[in-house]
Amino acid sequence: MRTLIIILLFGSFPLSVNLSAQAGLHDIGQYYPEFQSYANEQPVSLSYLSRNWPEQEQWRIMGRAKMMELLAYSPSPVPLNPLILEKVRKDGYTRYKVQYSITQFRKTEAFLLIPDNLTKPAPAVIALHDHGGFYYFGKEKIAETENQPQVLKEFIINAYEGRTYADELARKGFVVLCPDAFYFGSQRIDKSQIPEYFTQKYPDLKSADENKVIIAYNQFCNEHEQITAKYLFDSGTTWPGVLFHGDRISVDYLLSRPEVDPARIGCIGLSIGGFRSAHLFGLDPRIKVCVDAGWMTSYVKQMDNHLRHHTWMIYVPRQLEFLDLPDVASLNAPMPLMIINCNKDQLYTLDAMHSAADKLETIYRKLGVPGHLQVKWYDVPHSLNVEMQNDAISWLEKWLK
Image 1 (tube, one colour):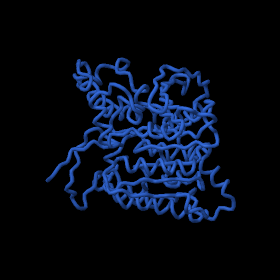
Image 2 (tube, helix red, strand yellow):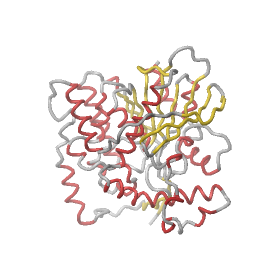
Image 3 (cartoon, one colour):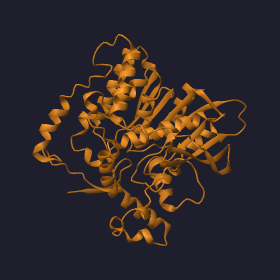
Image 4 (cartoon, helix red, strand yellow):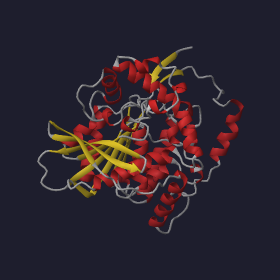
């Protein structure tokens, strides 16, 4: 039996994946047929393909309202109270580290990249970082920083072929915002604020070697996802609800900047960044174009031994009763959407990816705008390499410039 150790860019940190499948065996044993059958029978009643909708806007309103209900997270709004924490001149743009409030209890930091020589409000892109089992950093995984620790450099090489795409967008004239998501980077869990019981098995958290500290912290956070998810669910909310709320607040912040043209805002992300990008696009009409890389699948077809690869951050109870993932992304149609899929992606079945792509293509055709959707396939593992980045940037330039 051959085992491959890989770093999954969406789920667990190092995960041992058994590559020799045992036919007929499933991760939940004899219970699999029952719950796969239950998933197959879900009506997905708010899909654009579920009926002939007399009014497209009625469908969008109903779909968004139902998703917001299921996401179950609507904290009281608070002022942004924005701060600029740092300013660094770069080649072709200026990088600001900014901070703003998400809730009354929580702030986030983000990189704001402003191109040189702007003379009028410019198109803007929210760049959403991945999961990758790498919680210690968020925005730093997709925007160039100085004095990077070796473990971060290696991650960027593996996930992005060594090129942070946010900088490329800024050099192309886009204002770019790269916010930290809940549980990552500036919003990572403070290990000093939890019982030592949870961290004592990771002695390298106290190492003098920064790289060892980061690796140990990522391993701790991977394990701690489970209890964090329990607390979120028990409080009455969902992890995706918390993530997507933060992303919508980031749109608020972007719109507060005088450098930004509010009519030309897009979003892009890889992996959980793609998951966030698809939902930000589908749920927020202020987003005019989207690139979703490495996260477009059918939940129904994902159950065949592929949930083992995924984080707790994706689950929305009862969603399939109303909308599958491609249905959520379609809620902003006919606005332009690009899906980037990897043929060698271990996180999804090919059948699940093709099923989701086919559904989106059918919806965009039914709406009479097939050219507003582009689905591209690359013969690589889960990643957003330079070729893919260039294609994504061209898509954003086409629709936002």
